[in-house]
Length: 327
Ligand code: TYM
Image (cartoon, rainbow, N blue to C red; front, top):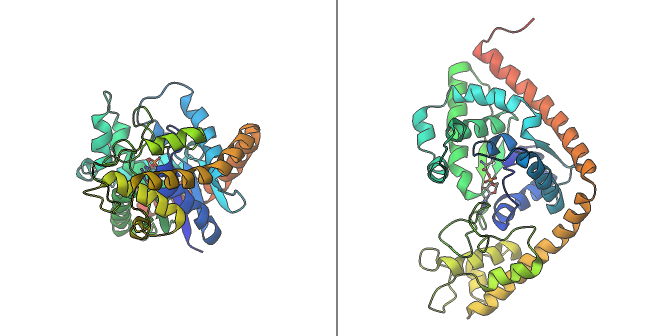
């Protein structure tokens, strides 16, 4: 069975971009692969947080992922800080990653522009992400388009390590969906939908009231002509709606476009498809929130399973480097 690993940060509520770009594919992969999904709380430390905030968000995100359909019988769901091998291998990977490679990461450029305090961790973040992946002999990493560059770096660094120290790491491949890999903000359709975008009018959160979601779509920015056509460069708003609806109805954006002559019905049908996706997820989320201990217990089992794989891989890496083994 192929091994799949992916990760998500506990910073802000899950949104439609996370679902279409990543999480819905995780739910599918768990049936066909040995799948591990990691809530990367150590990554969330790279930008300043209030004391206590990350823990609460981590639990909530775990509940959100379970509500979306991750099944602990079929996959391993765990929290990064519960498996200390992540930071241990993270350091080793930092030492085989160059400053130049890290400087080229577009996500660092974007995120550092938004920060007053730019932590060293924000800069070396992609090395920790590479460790997350390499720790599990991962074959496939299901992510949205914005993570492509980080997975490429992971491959380069793993190859470099293997060349220097002998076969150690499996070289992973990114798995990026054909449709939905880059869901855009409904108000600024040239920016990707994100947890941190201001105000929230352009972001559809899993926790949004269903009536509010319909409103967000009815107010989605389109353009001043009225032709329904899939053309990301010329018609970003309309193309985003077409992508969202197509991802949820298993069609191509071009096929979807052929069915509409006006923006109003396109917005309405897209909103309806999203509301129908989220309705059962919200019901399940409410059930999970009523019993936080059940989720905490699942995460503990997940950390146990993940840790047993990770510790063997770290040992392999340390042995191949030639660190003195402890008696
Ligand atoms: P994060 O937490 O920003 O996002 C989690 C996943 O959601 C996808 N995504 C999107 N997909 C489509 N459209 C969007 N607007 C959109 N926004 C987010 C992301 O591509 C991602 O797949 N660095 C990672 C977390 C990470 C990781 C890993 C991922 C840490 N270690 C190891 C894979 C493997 C991140 O910040 O994702």
